[in-house]
Picture (cartoon, rainbow, N blue to C red):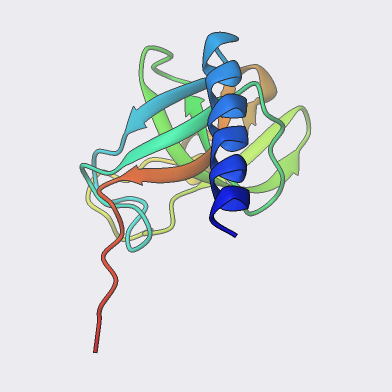
Length: 126
């Protein structure tokens, strides 16, 4: 059992290492409250660049009006040649999403969030 687990972990690590070497994975830090409650300021996300989005995925995109700025949003639906991206927390101060700037062209959607890797999830023990 332990050997199988170690082999599985080693295989997963090898796949991740290969993806990093091919520049397919990158890290992004969350700032702002627009994705609360799931994502908080200071969370670090593992993002697969170039991955196709599907409705419901959390994605990273270049802001259509400020391309130097990356935004983390939920892909809501396809709209023409782009994605309608929404914040989970529509009441967040300073929130900006497709309700403000319209659909985001596919070329500006840089990747799909695979996981939050920091901070580590806390499990309560009773």
